[in-house]
Length: 416
Image (cartoon, rainbow, N blue to C red; front, side):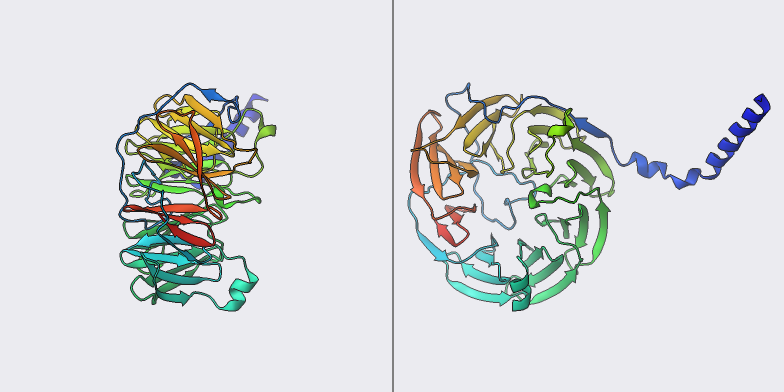
C-alpha cells in the first residue's frame, strides 16, 4: 500500500513539473493584490449637521475644457464665477460638447458636429453618419480635443479623428463593440473602455491599437459602470463587475485592483454604478459607488484610507478640506482627511422634489443644479441659509471657461 502511494505521489509530482509552464507566475504577480471591501451602515438618508460653515481656499480658473470633467483626473475645484446674469444662448440639441482652442465643439444625436465661436456664431459643421444610421440607433458620443484634433467615440464602437480647424477626417477606426466610457488622451494615446469592460490604448496619430486589457463583464450594463481617470502615469478604471483597476502606463502592468462588495451579498445591486473617479493633487483617489459607500484610496498602492457609508454617482467637487456631492435631493460634505460625514442635508422648497445632478462652489456659495433646471444657493458662511433663485428649462452639465459658465440644458447652451 505504501509503495502504491509513493508511486502515485511521484506521478503527480512529475505531471506538475511537466506542465508548470502553463502558468506565467510573473504575469500572475503583476496583477496586483485584490481586496474585498466591506462596510455595514447607510448614512445616505440620515440628517447630519455637525458643521455650520465652510472655508474654501485655492480658487481655480479654467482656460480650456477639452474633455469630459475638464481634465485627466476629473478634478473639479472651487471656481470664482458669477451666474447672476445670462449673457446669451443658442437653441440646439446636445449630445456632448467641449470648449477647445477658443471654440465650442458640439455633437448632437444626429451625428452632426458643429463648431461655434464663444459668442455662439456658427462657424462650420459636418455630418459624421448618414441618416439611416442615426434614424436606426440611439447614438451616444464622447468628444475630446487634443493637439488640434477632435476625437469622437460612440456606442457603435467607432473612433473618428478630425482636424479641429476644418473638420476634415484624419482617420476612422471601427472596434466593433460599443464604447461606454469617456475618452482620455495622455501622451499621444487614447484610452477608452467598451461595453465588455475591455480597456483600449489607441495611438492618437493613426487610430491603431497599442494594447488592450480585458476584465470580467456582466450582462447588465450602464454608462456609469465605466469610469476612467489618469494621474502620474497611472490609469484607473472601473468595470461593470464592481471592480476598480490601476494600470501602470509605462510597464503596462496591473498595479492593484479592488472589488467593491458587501458582507451581505443579497443587498449588492444588480447593476454597478460609479461616480467619476477623482484624484486630487496629493494622489488621493476618491470614488463612490451604488454599493453604498464612498472611498478614499491611495492611488499609488491601492491602500484604502477610509470608506464611509454614503454615496453618489455624481461627480465630486474637491476643496482643500472637503468632498462635496449630492444624492437625490440631498447635499453632503465629507472631511477629506478622516472620511467623517459633516453634513447631510435634505433640500426642499414648497414640496418640490429635487434630483441634483451637480455641485459647484464659488467664494460665497455652494450651488446645486437640479435636473429639472432649479438652481439652489447655500451660503458658505451659514449652511442653514438656502436660496432658490434660478430656473433653467432643464439641466445636464456645465463648462467653466475663463470668466463664464456655459450651462447645457440638453436643448440649449446658456452663457452666464
